[in-house]
Length: 131
Image (cartoon, rainbow, N blue to C red; front, top):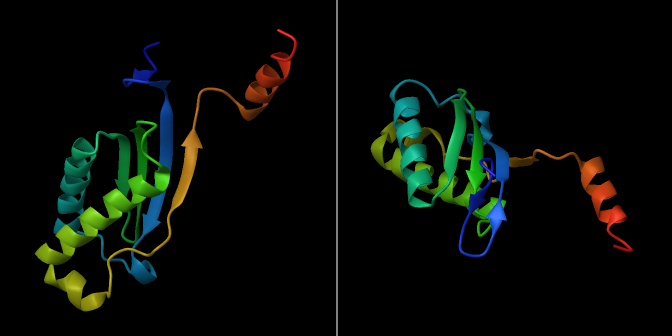
């Protein structure tokens, strides 16, 4: 059970790979901006009770490998990180306000990560009939 977390109503293991890009894929995530962005992502993750397992910031996009409570939809997680970091970075770095209308593109990628394959789950569900 060490791979699982609990809340008041569920036992879960929910992990996502989330990626999002800067507006127009501009290479603005460099230097002090990267340092501050990492701090902001860690701050926000603590506020919303999300575990960041791995984080990588490229000049024009971000990769996060996170673990979440099932009360969060992935769209809400992406919005929470993107909205907070955009607001704070644009406030602190004038170059981001002058070069871009917004810091992040509207879209993101989200993939789920799990311990059990799709085929195993299908076989398990199918085997339940008649039990």
